[in-house]
Amino acid sequence: MNIIILVKLVPDLVEELAIDSSGIALDTTWMRMIINEFDDHAIEQGILLKERNGGVVTVVAPDLEGVDDVLFTAAAKGADKLIKIKGDFIGANNHALARAFSAIVKELQPDLVLTGVQANNDLDGSLGPLLAGCLEMPYVGYISGVSLGDGKSRTRKEYPGGLIAEMDVSLPAVLGIQAAEQPPRYVAVSKVRQMMKTSTIEEQAATGLDMAGGPSIGRMFQPETAQHATMITGSPEEVATKLVAIFKELGVL
Amino acid sequence: MNNDVYVVIEHLRGQVAEISYVMLAGARELVKGYGGSVAAVLLGQNARGLAENPSPTSGQYMAADKVLYMDHPALSEFTSDAYQKALAGLVSKDQPRAVIFGSTSIGTDLASTLSMKLNLPTVSSCSSFSADGKFTSQICGGKIMAQGDLPGPTALVTMVPGVYKAEQGQNSQAPVLTLVDIPPLDPLRVTLAGYIEPESGDIDIAKEKVLVSVGRGIQNQDNIVLAEELATALGGVVSGSRPVIDQGWLSTSRLVGKSGKHVKPKIYLALGISGAPEHTEAITDSDTIIAINTDPGAPIFNIAKYGTETDLFDLIEVLTSQVKAAKGG
Image 1 (spheres, rainbow over the protein chains, first blue to last red):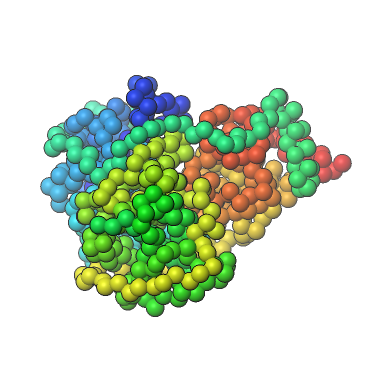
Image 2: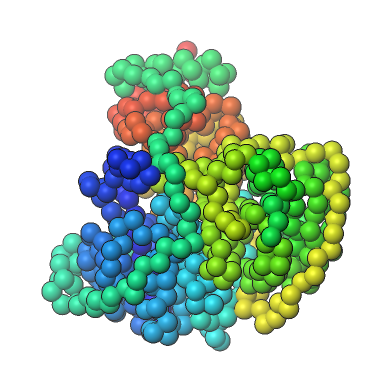
């Protein structure tokens, strides 16, 4: 089983975000990039599948700040091959990323491609279905469980309200992972450091970044809120007292 | 090419999803400028009743100028492959100005694949449109908004709820239904094996009057008990956002959000929940939202009635004991 996992780096939303002077893009000067949390689940799911079915797990990521850490962490979790795509990915949209990935994925002839179902900076679709469109593979997203056998994958697709559809998908296929079957495993920093010494990251050049297919942004801004919560301030005791008064007013106490 | 806006109607097991009406409302805004009509695109088998009969919940019809209906056994339940092939045929033949999908488990399986397949542009997570053809999308967990002109010739758009109400996409007149030809769908690479019913769980959070809901800010499983004590004191129960459920700290029956339950309690107390759109779309029917979050920029404060930046760990035990005291007194 040849499994490829595609990883995207996204803005860390814990940090404050700013718009740059153009007014149409995020200011990347101080922006911290982290692994898309759904891609972390995709890595976990890929490694679980390898542990159950055998095979090779390859993790592919674009060359952005922090990518080496992301790749070595994946190796520490059990990924066998690491590939970094070289190119100017700052500001590249998902269409460009999907095309760059598709050239590399095609060569690797995977049975299964996994990626996070979405990412926090998706504005022109999401990576998984775009890639499936490029490669003419079937795609199913919102997946929280995968089993393999008989040239196909039985996947658990999530619908609202907790309903699950079990879908059979012919391989090769692209799956958009919502949640792995278990929380992404923790690896110690020492193990990641060890990987930095023992594993290698293969570099491949992106063949041009074609952004066609995404919208042009005319304006980017932080939401002006029509309403904002009435903020309660003070010591924890004072805040608690005010909240209790609100609970009483609302009739729950 | 035409100036119509198509809306891909979402339905599951014989029920039209609410997002379908939200999308029809969005489409109505766009055709004000484009001058075309709003077409509901309905895929199914023996499913014309979904358009020809009023909704059993609202008694209203889809507010569409026409319904384009595709009837085929392979379309009886949603599968991405059959839907995508059927829609590819329709969209490339008609070339409408825009096609709207839900930013949902169904819609996101379709819009991006079709974008690459048909070489048409796509825009994600639109919350509203303007009559001059502009979209507004929310990205970065609702912290950033992006605006622009809907790209042409045909924009494949996914839409999130929040701005338009379902009622705006409904009216009292049954729309006219036209049967549409379907291109060959075989071989099908995705098939439905069956449904697994939701875990029923011990309680139904959609029916609770008080929810103490925990997000990533609760930090670890051991802290869940703090939320439980507060919930019990308030006569409510604990629910959670996606990261908490994915960590296995709460059962899936307690999930509030897009894949979980839509809730409408009297009080929704959000502890350490940032308020990403996937979560907030499921809580807007709550009577009063109270948010506790140390991040002053957390989007949850934009929909909460009351909020505090006090650290939840400094506050929660004090609050629980004050609630207990208030009940005692």
